[in-house]
Image 1: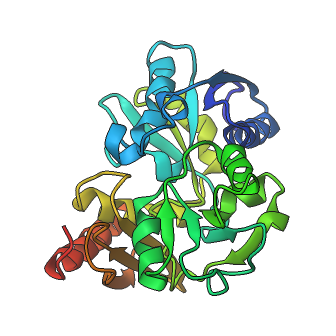
Image 2: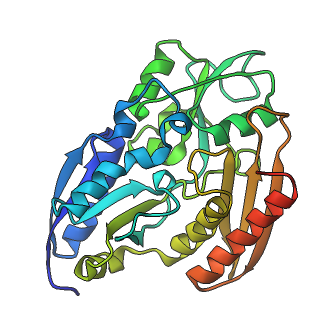
Length: 303
């Protein structure tokens, strides 16, 4: 075991973010470390009247946390990995990826049991360009409207009648004990998840080796290799978390299979799809696999 440390975790202040940071705190305390949380409000939490793709992408959720790390006010930051930009700033690194929760998307509705039973022209809320293109491919008749805010805010807007249904990550609902709100769990074959969806990533300053050592027992290597492949697809396609791109990898024995899909939010509902699989054991191998899938997407017309 590493020497016990006094650690501060930087976290957003939404209920889900605090649950995630608290989960990591409990795991570290079980290793003998003393851990405190530093709650922060990010730009991504404050700008709710515009889509993320128009105001800087999901990196807006991590910048203030990185400032806290840089200034020494915190030792690590816990992120939903799908919110983490594909390229971290100089001096920062991903030091740990935990075991993945359910990566699927979930349909939440007050009155309707599934996507198939939504009436023609129903209003569906999502903040994700990925979900927009996937939903259009499944139900081109739906009216898809922007939906911003933390998980509780999104559920409140649904309950107020602003939407017939909304699509959320199943992982967040499960972590907060809200499984009863899920009407339908989408099969990954019809709603392919975002890169990193369902996984927690921990960011530190690159030179903080003692913190990295403390996090080592929390690492789930199988998840980390899978999300490395997924994130490599996004990186090769331009690096934005706010693009209409899905990428999801699963282990089949000792082989990793990755599927990806891209759609044009302003064009036809058809998707460009690609997949590949291979045996691998390193992050370099995983990233090469993801890069190859991105090349296949571009060959099929994705941009």
